Length: 388
Ligand SMILES: Cc1ncc(COP(=O)(O)O)c(C=O)c1O
Image (cartoon, rainbow, N blue to C red; front, side, top):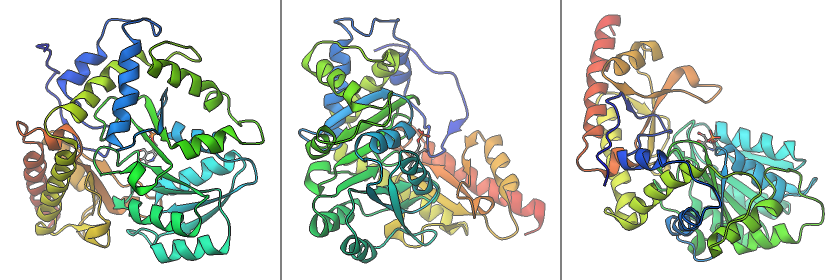
C-alpha cells in the first residue's frame, strides 16, 4: 500500500465526478505502460470481469472505451438500432432529452413518454405504449441526474419482457451503477451504460457499457452497416474478447492509466469491505440521512415521492426567497462543492448534492456529517442576510 495522499481540497459532492480514494488516484499515476504489455493485459481483463460482478451478470459483454457516459448513447444508437427503427424513451429529465437526441442523430425513430417533473414514467403508461406499437428498444434513465429521480428498473424490464419480449431494455446507469442495485441477468436488462466518474469511484474518461448476449446477437444480425466508426462494436468486440482471453488487440489506444485506476476501484468494490450488497445499503442510509436533515431544515425534494428518490444524490428546491448565489458560495466557503440545477425549465430553482462512493462507504470519513453541518450553517447565514 502506497503512502500517497492527495492534497487537501474542497469536498466534491456533486452528482459526479465524485471524490476518489488515494488508492485509486495512485493507481492512475502508474508509470506509462504499453497497452499491449503482458503486464497490462490481465489488468484490463480483470476490469471486464469485475464490471460484470457489479451488475450481477454472468455472461454479458462489457465494453471499456475511452470516452464519457455520452459515448454509451452513441454505442447503443450506432450498433443496436438501424436507421428508421422504432425506439421508445422513458424520459424523466435532461438526460432522457439528450439520449433521444443522440438516437435521432443516428436515424432512429423515437417516441418519448415524458414523466411529470420530479417523477418517473409509470409502468401502466409503458404497458399501453408497448401494446400500441412495436419497438426495437426501450431506453430509460435509471437515475436522472437532473432531478434525482429513480426509475423502477426491475419493473420496467418486467413490463417489457411481458408485453414486448423482443425489445431490448436499455438502462442509462451513468448516475446509478454502484450506488443503486442493478441485477442485469435476474431482471432481464439488455444494456447498462455508464461511466467511470460516479458510483464507480474513478476519474472521468471511461465509457463503460455492458451488453447482454441477446443484445450482442441483435448487433451481430443487423442488416445495415454500423453507423459510427469509433463507437462500432465491429471494431471493439474483438478487442474486448482478446483482452479477456489474455491477449492484446488494437483498434484505438485504451486509457491505460485510467484502466489501472478503474481496476483499483473495482477491486475495492467487488473484493473488499463493504460487500456490494452493503455498499447499496450504505448508499440508502446516507441518502436517508441527507434527505431527512434537509427536510428538517425546510428544504423540499424534487422527487415527488420517497420511492422515486435516488440513493446516490439529492435534488432540493431552494427555500422561498433564496437563490443559488445565496447558498452555493456559502457552502463552497465551507469547502463543500455541490451542483446547481440542470433541468431546463427549473434550473434556477434547485441544487443537487451527490452522495456516492467513498464519501458514503468509508466509515473513517465524515463527509455526510460535513455536508449536513455546512448546509445548516449556510442556510442560516443566507436567511439572515436576506431577512427570510
Ligand atoms: C444519467 C446520465 N446519463 C448520461 C450522462 C452523460 O455522461 P457524461 O457526462 O460522462 O458524458 C450523465 C452525466 O452526468 C448522466 O448523469
